[in-house]
Image (cartoon, rainbow, N blue to C red):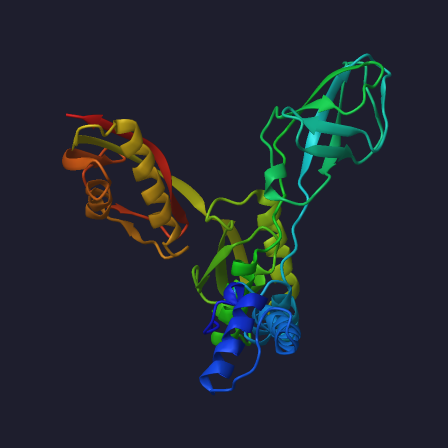
Length: 360
C-alpha cells in the first residue's frame, strides 16, 4: 500500500498556497498579503498540516507492514512469535609465532591485513618451545564480512614482546543481522503457509531462524519413512560453513517432533563457466560484455529456488548474451564446455564462474 500523495511535496509553502487558492475560489475578498492577519493564520495552520503530512509515511509503515517498515516489523513479527534473526560473530584459530615463553594475554586484539576488522583472543596463551601457539579469537562485531580466509588476519593492534608474527585459519560463523526485506518475507511466508505438527513448512521456518541462513528447502521422506533433509543457503544463496549448518541441525533437533531423523546440509555451489564468440558493434568491448553478462547471470541465478533442482537452460544464457548492449550476434557459446542445458541436483546452486568473451 502507498500514499496517494508525495509527502516530500507537502511543504508549508505548498499547503499555504492551496489554502489561499481554496479561499479565493469561494469568492471571499480578504487581505492575504504577506504579513496580513489572514496570512499569519494560514502560516500557522499550514505548518501544522505540513507536520501531519510528514508523519503519514511513519503511520503507514506501522499500520501496514512492508519491507520498508523498519523497526515496526519487529513489533509486528513479535505479535506472532517471529523474531528477527540476529547476527553472529565469526571465530577463528590464530597462530602466533615468536620466542618461546612469550605471553599472549587474553583480550589481545588482532587485526585483518587491511586493518579494517578486529578480533579478540578468547584465552591467554604462551608461545611454546616450537616457537608457536594457537589461540581462538572472536570478531568484535557481528557480520559475514568477518569470515576471512586463511592468512588474512596478520597484525597486532599493540606489539607484544616476543611475538614476531601471526596468521589465521579460516574464520567461520559470522552472519549479518536479518535484513528488513528478508524478515518481511519470512513473516509473510509464515502467515501465508500453514505451519504445524512438524510439516515441511515448519522445518523450513526452523532453519531460517538461525543466524546466517537466508534460504532453506525441505525434502520429506528423502531416505525413507521418518527421514527429513533440510538444505540451507546463505542470504545470497551461497554455501554455509559447517558451524552454521551444525547450529541449524541443533536448533531443529531441539524443536522437532519425536521420531524424525533429520539431516541438514549446505548447498553446494556449482560454477557455471561461459565461453562465447560474438560479433560486436563498433565501440563495444569484450570486457564490457563480459561484465554485463556476469551481472545478468547473477540476477538470473538469484531468482532460482533453492533445492528445486532446476535447469540452467542454454538458450536462456544465449538470450541474455544477445540482449546485451553492443552484442550483434553470437557464433559459439558453451556452458561448462558444452552447448547443452545444465541440470542441477537438489543440493546445487549455480554461481557465475569464468566468463570468457571473444570477438570473432
